[in-house]
Length: 95
Image (cartoon, rainbow, N blue to C red; front, side, top):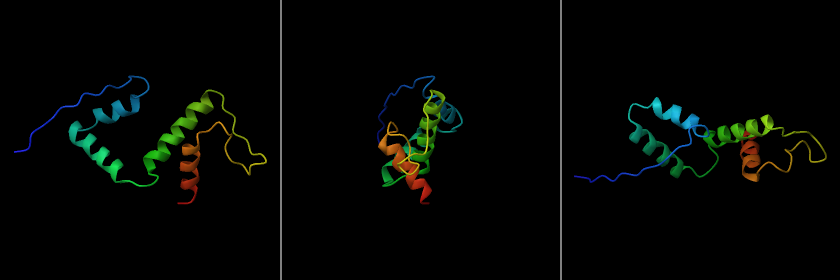
């Protein structure tokens, strides 16, 4: 029989609200978390989750006053957008 181990994690009630809502909807939280972690470990590229998080991050930045404007760079995002987020959005455009 397989043995079990327990791992405790914490969440920020404001910053992780989306995760907490998702967890509340799960019938078996442990199984759901294991599935998500395994899916993440098996992914080698950009997932819809990456894109969703990038969009959420951009939304937060826009609400904070970030300005996105086309310029000499061919309409690319301002340089203060992290490279991984810009790459995820670029990859979305190629799908």
